Image 1 (cartoon, rainbow, N blue to C red):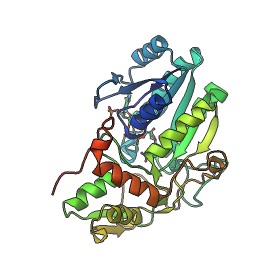
Image 2 (cartoon, protein in one colour; image 1 turned 180 degrees about the vertical axis):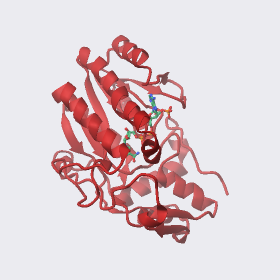
Image 3 (cartoon, rainbow, N blue to C red; image 1 turned 45 degrees about the vertical axis):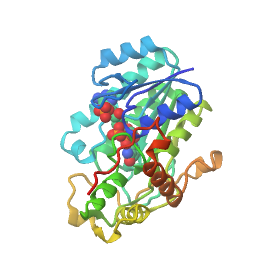
Amino acid sequence: MKAAVIGASGQIGGWLVHFLKGKGIEAHGTYAGVSYPGLHQLDAADHQAARDWILQLRPSLIFYPAGWTWVDGCEKDPARAEAANVADPLNIALAGHEIGARFVYYSTDYVFDGTSGPNTETDAPKPLSVYGRVKLEAERRLADKLGDRCLCLRTAWVQGPERQGKNFAYQVWKNLSQGKSMICPSDQVSNPTYGPDLAKVSVEMALDGRSGLWNVAGPDLLARDDLGRKVARAFELDPALIVGKTTAELAQPAARPLKGGLDSARLRQHYPAAMRSLDHWLADFRAMCQEPGNHPEWPFVPPQAS
Ligand SMILES: NC(=O)c1ccc[n+]([C@@H]2O[C@H](COP(=O)([O-])OP(=O)(O)OC[C@H]3O[C@@H](n4cnc5c(N)ncnc54)[C@H](OP(=O)(O)O)[C@@H]3O)[C@@H](O)[C@H]2O)c1
């Protein structure tokens, strides 16, 4: 079996390639701007090139952990947000549809307004931001065009080891290692989700032929500043360097859901052990980062020494 992973230089995509190969699947990953050995350069905005690549490769599974994920950037440039998060994946999904490929898309709890989280798959979405609106539009257009050949996984606050070392846990690790404090929202609540767990279960679900909308998020629900303190303690750094401020005080350009998060009960019913708790995955994350030599297949980005 052959699979394509658009955005394999990113955190979810990197782990997808890892787990696909572990299943003996011929996995072909792409990068846009940050190259890694073995990945193919592809700008999904070049619709003809993207379509040609899919039609030539002929994968039976396409994962799309890509897009423009900068929430405040999307707020300032809605046209780019829509192109990168709706039109570009749709173009690749339709090319794949022509050759019978199944498509896996990643969406977000930002499709909700944060008044009633954690939300289930059947709750009515009401996005507050451009990012949330375009992700919801993509969910709907993909489902409309692909039907049961589309699997849409909503997730939240993805953390853990990743090639580019960009996620919130890395920011905490890097800043606090250098004695720098970090201001974090104290009233935005969601589910931290371990990237490797998300990628692993994504592969299982795709291979099981799952379709439709599924919540795939970690089991813990907490505020962002509390997550920062948890990460600090796991890495033996000073949790007092995490400074909580309310969303109103922070005045971020895009509105965020406050009472956010995803209820992944349906996932737990079918894949009970898929998503580890925060304490378990933080221990796993720390061990992997401390012993990168034990994981030569995975190029970790260690924090800068202080
Ligand atoms: N991270 C989260 O907490 C979270 C939460 C909910 C939903 N999601 C969704 O999950 C998906 C993946 O998130 P992530 O955190 O893994 O993102 P990420 O680490 O930022 O990776 C994004 C990937 O997309 C690629 N990419 C960017 N622009 C592209 C383009 N024009 N053409 C082709 N590839 C392009 C990037 O390539 P280069 O780096 O090489 O440029 C990178 O490989 C996104 O759709 C996001 O909306 C993420």
